[in-house]
Image (tube, rainbow, N blue to C red):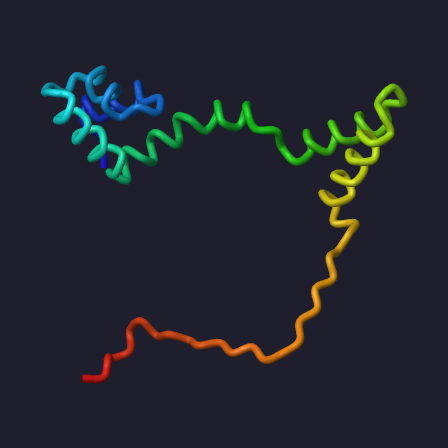
Length: 124
């Protein structure tokens, strides 16, 4: 489904404040009306998807990938100028990211699992 021109404008100007985005997109009304319109737009799955698609490149650039984190931890671990505790923590985080360590969890006792069928007829 194609977005209306106002909805597309909302997507383009949305930066975390739906009321402000509604105002900038050309919706009219009081702050309460604009807030309602902004919330309605954010609940619209087509608008939400368009906003997520627009924000994805910026988010990807801000968030370090697994490889980026591992490269950072490796550089910290290998930097002889860093304090030993920092180097040790970097090596620990690097090892955890590679699943070098496993936590042993022991459980004793009985476990019961109740499966609830939401489609089953309820007793009258």
